[in-house]
Image 1 (cartoon, rainbow, N blue to C red):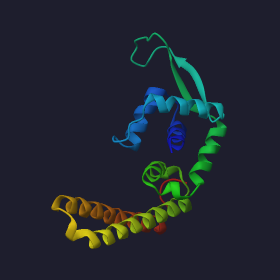
Image 2 (tube, rainbow, N blue to C red; image 1 turned 180 degrees about the horizontal axis):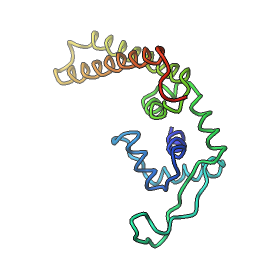
Image 3 (cartoon, one colour; image 1 turned 180 degrees about the vertical axis):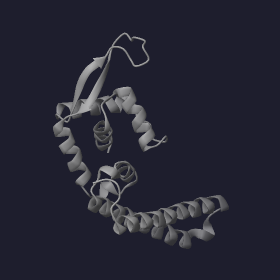
Length: 182
């Protein structure tokens, strides 16, 4: 999913690694930290595949002060744009899990409507199954739980039910008509 996120952000505009890392953290959530140790090897792999390229380093940042060395600015190649479009068109279990869904949702505006609908329906089914499993487990073990564990389980169930309702609304909106995006 990091590949989709990097390609998606670079599809919006070229940027250097630090800026890309900040945008990834903002885009995918504060609870998901991206280290330079995972970002730069990913950038290198994407570059070796021919999906991104480097622009000339910026010697002087927009603030007017000069740094000792320029920052590499990464941009999407034509092949990278095609690959990104192919990745967005893929629908499968990885698009429905927690990490995959959040990443895919972040780029829904660039995703075809039929694909968005498939992903939303897949996620809704996954979350419905998860909520049903939690409900079943809670019914079997409720009497043996202390009040804190019970409250934690109920909170998890409420969260899953809330997400199912939200997904149902998104699906209904998607079916009703064209939204912004492909």
